[in-house]
Length: 228
Ligand code: GLN
Image (cartoon, rainbow, N blue to C red; front, side, top):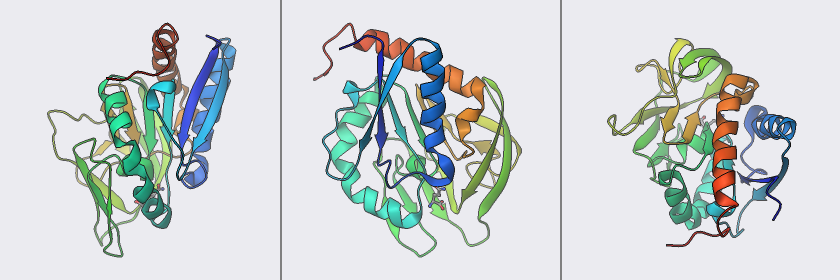
């Protein structure tokens, strides 16, 4: 294996890619190329085998309710590997519908409850009052982020000792209309409602790139597959 090849797993790229979320992967590939790395992006779709530890980065984009329903049926096969990967500080970015599916459930506006992977203690519900759509701005540990949101699901943390938001709202809704926070930072996992894509904010993109390179260096000095 070339130690200059960064492997990216794009979960359900063909189903989960609203408002140009694939731009996040393209921006990371561009920034990594400037650092001298090539990238390989694998679409992990319905029925595909997947070991998260074979990758330097896992990406999961946004999706419409119907596509989330389809994906939610296939996703539990990957719970074990993703749970270990996240809890082992490996880098992962989930946007909107993908972020929702990492929690316990998403109850949609048609009353359907889509089960999530239940890796992170959060849940998402539709409430009749609001679809959260428009420009967003928020302050993160890496500085200000400007993006766009469009979601009906409102996300709430069930364990606020364990989960911390990605940022504090300046403009827009973020996770829900009450908490004035956006997204999630847990270890090297980032969840966000930001499209646009998010990583046009190169402060966040550079921070994620550093996480990817650090894990890549560790991974390529070890056997590619970690088993416990
Ligand atoms: N379907 C979900 C919602 O409306 C997620 C939307 C998205 O990923 N853009 O809340």
